[in-house]
Each structure stands twice: as C-alpha cells, then as structure tokens.
Length: 162
Ligand SMILES: CC(C)(COP(=O)(O)OP(=O)(O)OC[C@H]1O[C@@H](n2cnc3c(N)ncnc32)[C@H](O)[C@@H]1OP(=O)(O)O)[C@@H](O)C(=O)NCCC(=O)NCCS
Image 1 (spheres, rainbow, N blue to C red):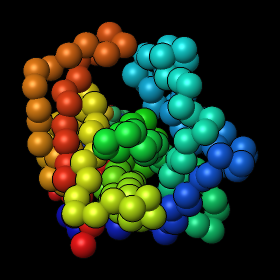
Image 2: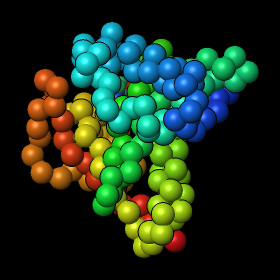
Image 3: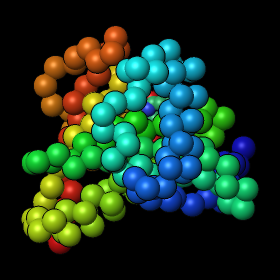
Image 4: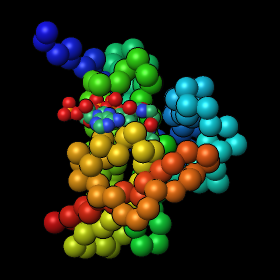
C-alpha cells in the first residue's frame, strides 16, 4: 500500500508574549501527556513554561494545532522536552519535523549567544521512544531513571554550529 502523505503544515516559533498560541501548545500536551499517558497536570507544567519558547506544528490552511515541543537554554547545554503529536496525527513525520525544528532553533540561538563549535541537546526520553531519538543522532547516556513515575533515559545530541 502506498504511504499516506502528510497533510500540509507549518511550524510556528511561539515566543513568551504569544499567549494564545502557547495555550494551543499546552492543550496538545494535556491531550497527550495527561489524557493519553496519565501524567498529572501538576507534573506536566513547570516553572519554565511561561518564559520558554515553544514550537507549534499546525495544519494549513485550517490552523489546527497537532504537535508541540519545548527547547530550553541551560547554562552549558540545551534541553528538549514536552515533544508531543496528537495520536491521530502520528507517523506523518511531524515528530521528526518538530525535532529538527528544535535543532534549527538551537543552532540559531547558540550562534546569537556567541557559542561556536558545537552544542549539546539533552532529552529525557521515555523508554518506548528511545528509537525515535536515536534516529536523529541522540545517544543514550547513563542508566534509566524514574521521572514522574515513568522510566526515562537521558539521550544527548551534538549539534554542529558551522
Ligand atoms: C514520539 C512522537 C513525538 C513521534 O512523533 P511521530 O510524528 O509519530 O513520529 P514521526 O512520524 O516523525 O517518526 C519519524 C521516524 O521515527 C520513527 N518512530 C516514531 N516513533 C518511534 C518510536 N516510538 N520508536 C522508534 N521509532 C519511532 C518513525 O517510524 C519514523 O521513521 P521512518 O522515517 O524511518 O519512517 C509521538 O509518537 C508522540 O507524540 N508520542 C507520545 C508522546 C511522547 O511519548 N513524547 C516523547 C516524550 S519523551
């Protein structure tokens, strides 16, 4: 059977003042992490959310929000978290598009902040999606650990800046 092609879509960089679009990112996370996976709302939202940049993947021309991810700059590395695609829109490469969108955002942010050479992105991968991150260059480091009641694995990607 021929593969189903992905619906037309775009990725928006949601900056902190874009409250309405940030709420759309939150709504996707509630659908995926709270309703589907059973994490609590308290676990899902943290002190970084309001001031962070979020990426929002939405369909065009409908503007229906279907995926999100949150990159954060830490002092010596970047952190990728809250990657979620609504269940009915998986396997259209939207997860890949969001992940690579984070890589582009990190590259630009790192250069703007005077970094050169390379930077690291750390992700706490749920165990069933380790293979997804591995496809895009993330390497497992250390032992599995519990986070919010689910086993996770630290996975790290190296992003070249030149
Ligand atoms: C993980 C997630 C974001 C992936 O998004 P997606 O849109 O379904 O994935 P994509 O279509 O972009 O997949 C890209 C590639 O990764 C592969 N892949 C997807 N999920 C995978 C998994 N769990 N394990 C291994 N490979 C996976 C796909 O088969 C595809 O490979 P291909 O290009 O060779 O065909 C999505 O499944 C999701 O939202 N899951 C629930 C939330 C979650 O667990 N988030 C991660 C928290 S750490």
